[in-house]
Structure formats: C-alpha cells, structure tokens
Image 1 (cartoon, rainbow, N blue to C red):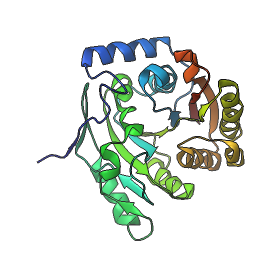
Image 2: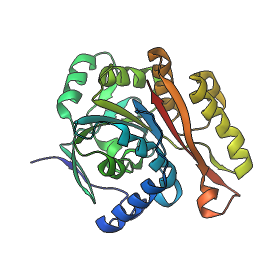
Image 3: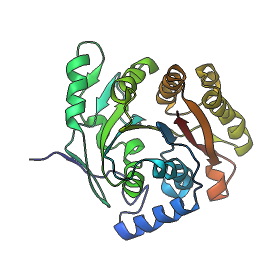
Image 4: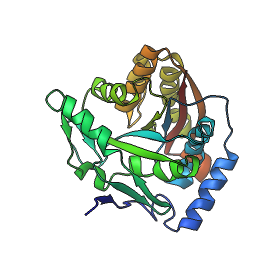
Length: 268
C-alpha cells in the first residue's frame, strides 16, 4: 500500500475543484512580476489563497527561471500549527495528493538524512504533525503550476533552535543545483495595518541584510525557518531580495487586524 497524504485544507484555503484551482493560480501567476533571479531558496506565505495567493505567486513565478527540462527536489519547510512537539518531522509519504494530482516524495533522500542524523538530531518519521498542517500543503499546487518534473522533501518543525533547521537545509541543498528550498511563513498577526507594517519591516531587514539579529523584533510564525535560511544564505554568500509584501488588508479591505505576507528570494 502506498502512503498518500490527502489534502487537509482543500475547499478551505484553496478551491478543491481542479479547474477552479488552476484558474485561480494562473491568474495569480500572470499578475506576478518575473525578476532575473534564479532561486536557490524562496520564502512564501501560507494563508488562504484569497489573502496570500498574490504574494505567494511572486515567489513561485521566479521558478520559471529554473531549467524547464530538469528534475528538481523541493525542500519544503514550515512550522507546526496543530501538533506541539520538539524536533523535526518528515512527511514520510509516497505521494502528496492535491486537486491537481499526486506529487512524489523523495523518500530516498529523507532516509539518507535520517540514517546520518538519527542519533544527533530530534527527528521523527511520525507523520502526525503533517496530517492537518496547512503551511506546506498550500505550497504544493503552486509548485505543480511552475515545475514540470519535481519531487518534494516535506519538513515540519516544532519548538527547536533554528540551527537544527539550518542543518537540514545544509544537508539537502549542499550546493546542489537540482534542489530548491521553500520556507513557509506568514509575518505578524492581527495588528492594525500600520502597526503590522512597522513590525514586518524588521523581517524585511533581516532578509535584506542577511542578519538574523533583526528577527528579534520580527513576529513571523515561521521565524525558526526564516532564521535558518537567512543564516545559511549569509554563510553561502548568497544575495537576497524582498520581492513582495502585502497585508490581508490589501485583499480584504479590513485594516483593523491584519496578517502580513512576504515573498523573499535568495540567489547566487
């Protein structure tokens, strides 16, 4: 029996109808600008598509700068919203199902990592943190729209030091040009719009300057993953850019209590 991770937030965070979903994603991607940066890593939000889809699309539009004929592994990293635990959990399924079809998981590379680090890091192949988690699920349909041939390496983390996530990135990325990292995070939550923008500016600064000290005042829910990729990019000598920033107020019109969404890219 193949283990398949079924959608948990289809028809809630995004349309469950394949045609409707494809139409929505096509619209977002057509509106998104294409920059001349080949992504080594991107940061993308994970709210409902009507709120964060336009910003997520800016991150994924840059995947069109990758080789269209190449197979890619996408290392998906996001925070656990539903299952409190200390460590990292691999989405150890054979496939992840979306309304657009099934996406294979690169179990072989996960097994290589676990064999090497099982006694050193708090790792689990228990998929419980993945079963209801939206932070990775909402990234996958976007990937299906911009990549022809890819598999995923899904990682959800709990309460751990960012250095552990950085070790995960280092193992799977390791200067490979067939692996792209996606860090899933929203920014500040439920402040008035003008306050949210002031707080989220610290997240932008951390990315632009590749300096995690600015994250002390950043309130991203995926701050651990964000710190890991910023520190990794700094060590690798990558460049970084803030590509897009919006709040939920930009789409809903309600600016009294908003959530911040950003698109960041890291490139050589």
